[in-house]
Image 1 (tube, rainbow, N blue to C red):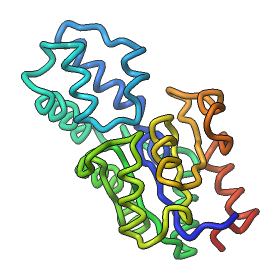
Image 2 (cartoon, one colour; image 1 turned 90 degrees about the vertical axis):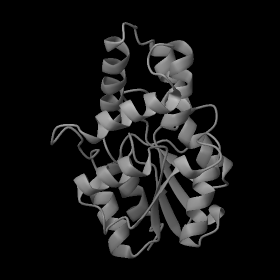
Image 3 (cartoon, helix red, strand yellow; image 1 turned 180 degrees about the vertical axis):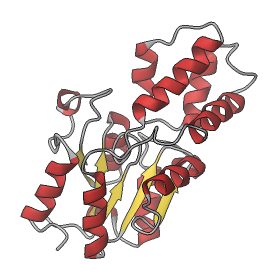
Length: 222
């Protein structure tokens, strides 16, 4: 097993942001007099915010005058979080540094908006370590459709079958596999467990440290 490039998801994979997204969404929903359903949240993890906003307005009609307004409210809150609210996932810095030092082609393929991607990457200090960063907001379809992964592969000039994708959610894992990539899934335990992937992906890891150990042990990019 060898690959020519690595493509990262961001939220819940590289940065510990999923609980923060949930907190921001809950505050917005409850401030408008609604109760946030766990089933609704679970259904939408990994989706683009604009697609998520459409679903939110359907369930909570008074949340905003339009899905675009709801999306703007959520994104605005994420971009104005207090310093230190967003942290790297354990092992993320080491993994990113490792593939950067190898010179492995690499990119982010995220459901977050480009503004959020750039903001989080800057907070982590990864601007130069992950120079190519792509948002599904510019794609016809968001995850679980493969569009953003296919786009990222084209941009870095590597065939999808030669790319290793790293994901934390069902929607993201489905997107990477649909693109024809191998996907190493590291479930974000704030919303998922290994059992959630047993029916369609057998490459599930407990942590990014385990992924890095695998990459080094098998010299997957060396």
